[in-house]
Length: 144
Image 1 (cartoon, rainbow, N blue to C red):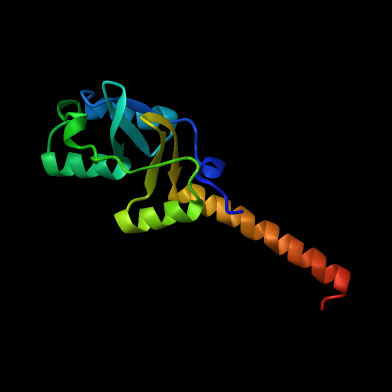
Image 2 (tube, rainbow, N blue to C red):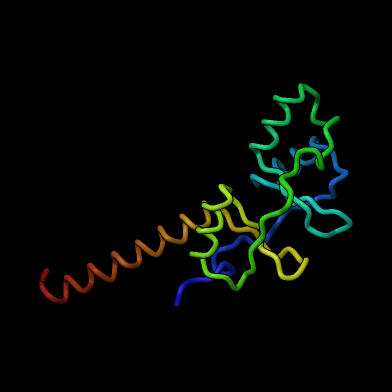
């Protein structure tokens, strides 16, 4: 059976309200060593701000981050995925939407995030495991 999103997602998601300044979002990213922050409205997921969004906002606006409201920068609507969906579904969705992160939700509750790096790590580990199986089989069969 194909792995599901819940098998590879990161459960710790950093979030803040859409009224937060971009300065605070940058601070959260640095403090928690993450590349994105989920933006909420009244506690419900609304959008996402990524490192790329920060750079673009700072460059285009010419304003200090403290003066830029997060809601003006957040990617909206938020692209989400159910934790029980297969990894292939997430890959296809990321390709179609041209994004690198999907927020994992159950209803309106954020339960994780899955990134391109999460998927690469998963498939890298899977590939290594398959190579080990192949090598063991070759040793048993004398290299045939």
